[in-house]
View 1 (cartoon, rainbow, N blue to C red):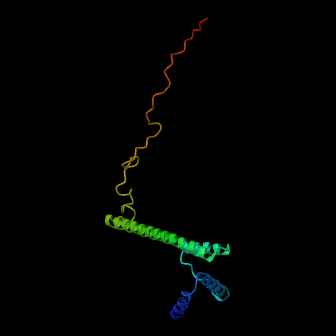
View 2 (tube, one colour):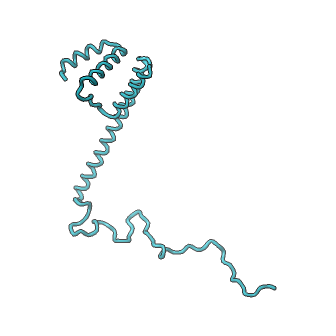
Length: 161
C-alpha cells in the first residue's frame, strides 16, 4: 500500500464521526469483495472474534454509539488476552531454552542412553523403585492382612438332640 495515500486517507477519516466511519468501512468491504484479489489478512483469532461481534451488533440495529462503546470495552479485553497469550509463549520458550541448556550441560544427546545401548544413565535396576515411589509388590509376595472377621469355633460333629 502506498504510504502517502494511506496517510491521506487516515487524515480524512480522523474528521469523520463513528456513523460515517462505519459507512466507509462498509464501502471498503464492498470494494474488497468486488475487486480485491484476496481478503485482507486478519491479525489473530482475537481480531476475528471482535470483528464478528462488531458485525453482529451492527446487523442487530444497535445505535452506532452503543456499538462503538461495546467495541471499546471488547478491545481492552482483547488487549489483556493478547498480553496473556504473549506472556505464556515467552514463558514456554524460556522453559524450553532452560531444558535444552540443562541437557547440553549434562551431555545427554540421546535422552541419557549410554553409547553401549544399555539402560539409561542413572536408571534403577529392574524392579527397583526410584526415589519418591513406593516399590511395586506382586500380589503373591504381598503380606496378607489379618481378616476382620472374628475367629469361629470349629463345628462339632455331635448334634444336640
